Length: 184
Image (cartoon, rainbow, N blue to C red; front, side, top):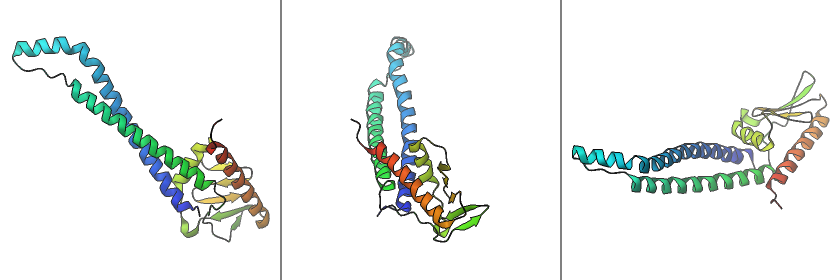
């Protein structure tokens, strides 16, 4: 059974690993710049070191090892993010998805509002989901607004609200299924 708590943890991991990936890519860019510049400066630097009586170390071997290490880290993190995204899409588009909503909605201003149980918030799920769908949070699908704190449906009628919610979730899940399916 797919549940929102698992999805929230997966979304946190995706966001954290993406942040790490960005830092490592920045470090790799710096190392690549250094590797590129050493041959351009080698003659001057080695001659200067010789004139002042010190040894010259161009650090090229050290930088190449660092580059290899950073590239491996990038590959591993990229693979982890890809795997977590695939898992996220599979779980959120599962017919067994359980969304922990309070069973009794609040009717306010002509809208039906379902809060998450125990006041839960799912910020990370909606950040990743918004990105996948190419929409901004809160997500609005038909007459249903899905946010990290509640689901708001544009109707006062509870049965109609349930129908609209189910329809919106089906649409989201179908869209994600298309994203998950292999490219032909």
